[in-house]
Amino acid sequence: MLNGFKLSLDNVDPFADWIKDGREILESTWPKKSRELDDFIAKGVLDGDAIKGKWFQKTNAHVFISHAHANESQALGLAGFLWKKLGLLPFVDSLIWGDQTELQSRIDRKYCWTDNKKETFNYDKRNYSTSHVHMMLATSLTAAMDSCECLIFLDTPKSISIADADAPDLGKVATESPWIYHELMTSSVLERKADERRPELKLAMESHRVHASDGAGIDEPLRVAYRAPVKHLSQMPVEKLQEAARRNVRTFDALDWLYQHGAPNDRGPFVLLKSLLEEVKRKG
Image (cartoon, rainbow, N blue to C red; front, side, top):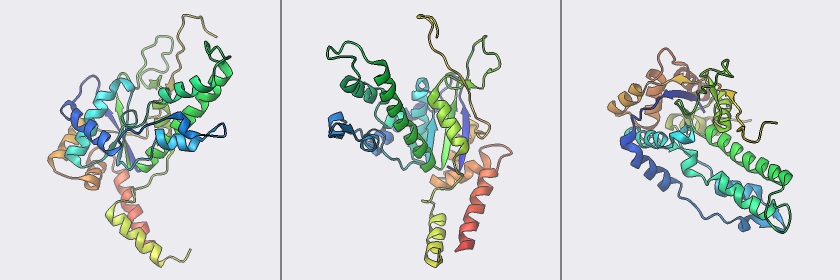
């Protein structure tokens, strides 16, 4: 991942006209596969790698769209806009991968009952199964972000703000979503690197390789909030995305334009990209 943007939308949806396009490109690029749990059992042991590969298959997208579940339609619209107007292949996990709650349910219904009556689940077994399902999803999200050159986080009242008088210090920089927290935290520590599919970078790297020689109450809901790490994300005005579309820049040229002009006073990612290219060519 080379760069990340924060796209503040509030309750508006400037990309509503591209929702259908977003669904089409996601479903055609990563069609849903049949997922039968019994296909992954060998001698009573679940093949975690095989399950992960089937439910959360690898991606080859340009842009990872991080969003709250409640903002799924906005994520779809942005996905369609990026594909149709900028030629950028988007990734939206909830619309590509199998539902992790369905995977969780299938495992629990097979392995986690208290007894043969199958009326209640065993608490410890459920904790163990949940840890595995969550680890499969978390590591898959990390790999997906690492493979994309750019991340766009949909900053909305449903994703990153928490209105709670009992936690005033968290203010509007908190999220109650563990998955958004994971995506933001992971994106803040991933290695900054350009996509190897960039034509100029690929040529430079190939040249280099050729010449190289080396306890609450029962009615009280559980709520957990995290301070959302967003300082590493540059603010992306919607108008800049729309301007990029008017300029008819496509794929990596579109990303380069956004790195240069999308975030006011922040040309760091573009400078880093150029330095990476120059370093690879110099070593070659």
